[in-house]
Image 1 (cartoon, helix red, strand yellow):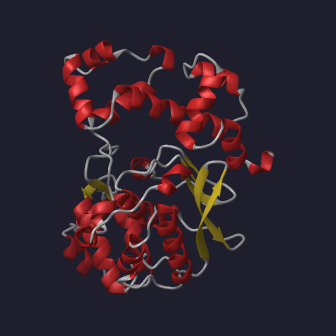
Image 2: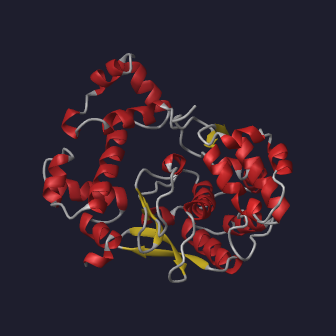
Length: 342
C-alpha cells in the first residue's frame, strides 16, 4: 500500500513508530501496548499502512499507562497520567478561549523541562510559541504532539475548528508529513529559528460554554477525538479544494462547471456543501488564503502582483480579505514570519 493517501479516521503507521520510539529506546516491551490497542505487530514493518484513529488513541493511552507519561516519554519530566484531564477541567472553567489557553500553557510550562510553550499576540495574529534552550530541537513528532494536545483542546473549548494559518519548526523536515498536513495545515515550514503555530487572534475572544456533561464526554473519548477532529480529507469540500489548487485562480470553475467535474447536478453540489457548512465561495477563500500565506512565507514578491495572481481586482481588496482571514495585513504577516528581514 505504498504511497497510500490519507484516509478518513486513520493514522499512518509512521506515527505509530514515532509514538513507540522512546519506549523502545528505554527497552520496554511493546507487545503488550500493541495488543491493548489492537494493532498487529506485523504492521510495524509496513510504515505506509494505516491504523484507525481509535486504535492510535488506544495506543496513546496504553503507552501513557505503561510509562506514566501522556507525552510518549519525550521530555525529561513526565506528563503524568491525568495531566491532560486536569488541564482540561481547569480550562473549561474559564470565560474565554484566551484565558483558557493562557492557563493551559502555564500548566504545561510547569509540567515540562527543556521547553516552555506560551501565547504571543501581535498585529492580529496569535502564535503558540515554544521557547527552547539554544541549540536544542525536538523531533517533529514532539512538536506536533504538543500542538495536537493544545490545538485539540482549544477547538473543543471553542466548539469549532480553529484554522491553523501556518506552523514553523526548528527541526528538519521528517520523511513523513502528510498526516500533519491534514491535522493542521499544508503550510508547514522546517529548519526555522523558532517553533510556533499561528492562528487568527480573533479566535481568542470566543466564549467557552461547556457543560459538565460535555466535559465528561470529551475526556472519555480523548485522545482519539482530537486526532482527526473537524476535518475529513476525503470529504467533498476537501476534494474541491484539492481541485482548485491544481488550477490557477483565473481558471477556477463556476458552480455549474464544478458540479460537472464531480459528476453531479449543481443543486446536489450546493446541498452537499451546505450540509458540510462549506459554501463554494468559502472554499475558494480558504484556498486563496492558503496560497497567499504560502507566497508571503516563501519570498518577498510584490503584494500587488500577488493580489492579481489570486484573482483580486486590486491590492486594496486583497488587503481587506487577508485582514479578515488572518487578523493582520500581508506586511504584518510577512514581518512576523521573517523577523530577520525587518
